Image (cartoon, rainbow, N blue to C red; front, side, top):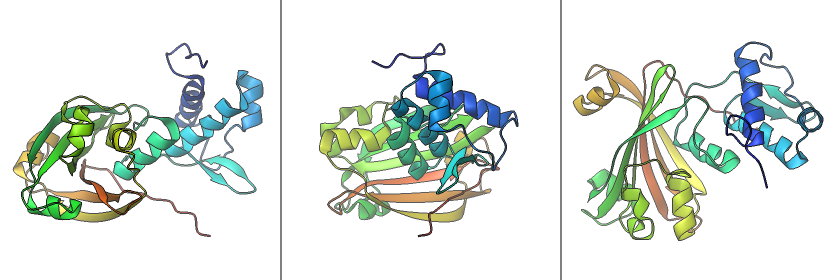
Length: 246
């Protein structure tokens, strides 16, 4: 059985947090090697499986990347966590949050879907949908206002979707657990839009101000849409993506 560290974290998370702190302090800089699995095993007295998860956490948090023939190196951390980023975090670490992030669930309800939502989800006009809205913050302020819409039928299998509380494995993990529908494909659309008065009140910005917005549509293994989501980014945030070019 894995025993949590002194800060109440599992060993792999504790070690990753300590390495991330070294990066934040400048002791490890972009391009430097992250301690290897063998080094972590020897220094921390943990299993190879635990040491391997440390690198996965750092990569998912945007603090490291693996380069074939070189190893895992430090990268400049990103200041944004979008829906796709959170899905990667959940699968790599079991949590959809970066270090220092926190979330406020603003609402979780069953509503009549707008046309653009039902169209995206492949539902009939006026069909009921689950709408979950949350506000992510970190030490620098608002990260993003995130809204997700899912078919109302999913609420029958996962009533937690209608509770205004954080979901331990987020909507992705809960839907997969209850329905077997795993998100396997997504489409992202990035635009700059004026902030509505409602969004401006929530995010503490001026109504009409331009904001970077990302919408995501996810499909399951059967090619059926599972979730439609929109993130409105906080001021000063940026989008960043890395891809392996094979």
